[in-house]
Image (cartoon, rainbow, N blue to C red; front, side, top):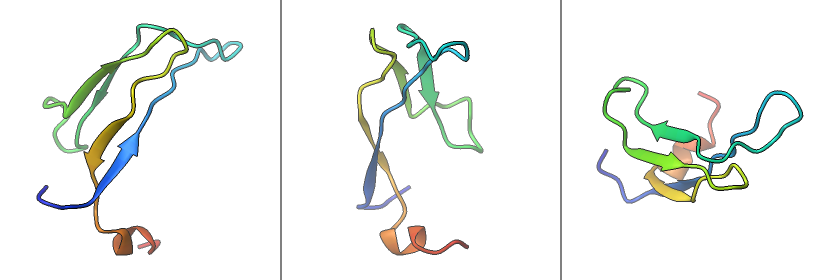
Length: 67
């Protein structure tokens, strides 16, 4: 995607029982249509969070419309 717009993403991973943070979880970020080519692969820290990464985003105008 060729754009000058970016957004940020940070993922938190917790267990379904007790919401305990999961350290060492592997998180892969990819386009929906291309899951075999990850844009980023992150690993959670001791608090179950990944680092914050910047990703390409659509123009803000498109994000303000429900369609």
